[in-house]
Length: 462
Image (tube, rainbow, N blue to C red):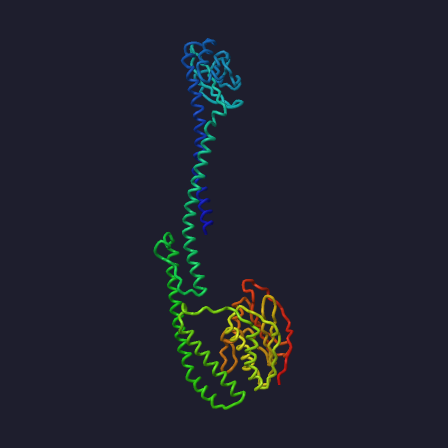
């Protein structure tokens, strides 16, 4: 924007300068021409008194020598009878009328183009009632004297005007750009989570800002206040809704305590305890103000998280007689996401297997680790996806009772947050659905889409 304003100022100023300076330059050139011919006419008129007294050649020569043009050999007199005194640049053919028979009083002054300039011809009455023709040579240098200097001065004025306009436009552009950048910086800061950022609309920082940007700043501040209000209301609503889960959780905990001993009872009590901890964490997080939130380390080991969640779901898989497998978990695989978010995504993928496939259907989890990304493949031996596009669209899933259609959307958001992606397809090994969660480990680089073949192995657990 700043350079655009400078260019516009330069273009406008140059056009105005040319519109005024070109006519001025031409007028100066015409003035110099008129000045040269006027001086020549004065030189010719200076011989009038001498020619009115005598036409003697020596007397005329002395009179011519007393003038500036005569001393510079620029003056000549064509006397009646064809006699010429002085240095003439013209011949008889160029003279008006007849030089041999004499000129009449009807002959007027004029100019003749000669080598190196012009000859001014001025008829003058002489002694005896005749007419002589006074010739004054006007060189080209006299016609353009001072014109070059005038053009240089006018060009300097034009450059000065352009420089002033550029300085003014740059100053104005700097103010506008400063205000626009301040607004853009505030928007980026708000987008990164700083809800306290506001754009100054009064005082020294906002001085010189255009009215339109001031209105944009007012609108931004109002939007930021509204966002803070909505987030606060959302946190309160999340806390209230989470608190309502305490009563059924208490009933579940009491029922789990009455189950007695056994692997299934222990797994149920462990799940209820974990659910209580998650609900408590949700309530605490919802009640906590954004500025009081502790710093969360971004990053975890994908292999450790996947192994932990597969181990959790393996107990239920054994109860339902589902063969399952885990492959590719030999080496660590750090990813730039929080542990809880990745665990929630893996739980959503494995939960879909148990929810949408029949009891006894096998499933497998493979980890593909490369330099730029970590891919989690979850496949099963079920019927697969009838409409993959609808399955991944938020709230569009139709999984029957208890399905909200949000599970795969949570997985998609996790992947896209790192520049990765989620793809749905058919398992080449088990024949059912296969979901690929790719997490980029270099989020600052836009990675090309890679086609990967499943290389994991199925480990049956009976």
